[in-house]
Length: 139
Image 1 (tube, helix red, strand yellow):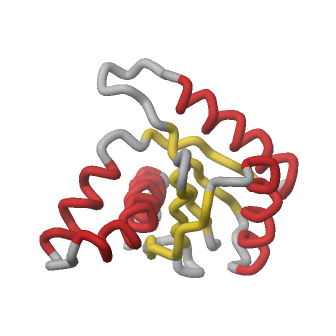
Image 2 (cartoon, rainbow, N blue to C red):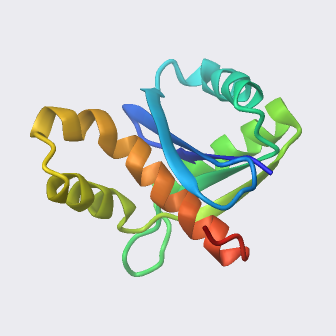
Image 3 (cartoon, helix red, strand yellow):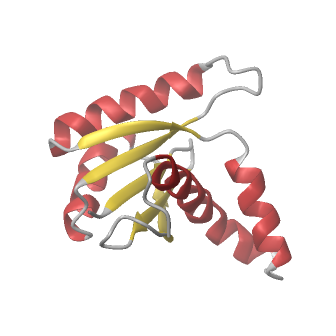
């Protein structure tokens, strides 16, 4: 069961996909967040291309667990994706995934420009791996 993960942002959307067995997350790509009105359709098309059977969307919470406008935007995106795809869309807490992605890319020796290109997709892969592990799908 392939799962598509989405790390929403205001400028870029990070994407990751699981292996066909739904056990291992892999960074996929990033796409522009704008135009916002076409985003659900673009993501629905991508879900079809990778043959995703479900989706996860990162839910940005504050460190104290409260929600801000970013979390509301993620909830709205998830609802629009459910409507556009007919797939199950789960929200997953994404606290600290961007920072963890950046640290991993620095440790791997990537330069700043390359880190910028990869960080959103790596953050999406971290969100997805968390989801897969919490649902007993360990790699």
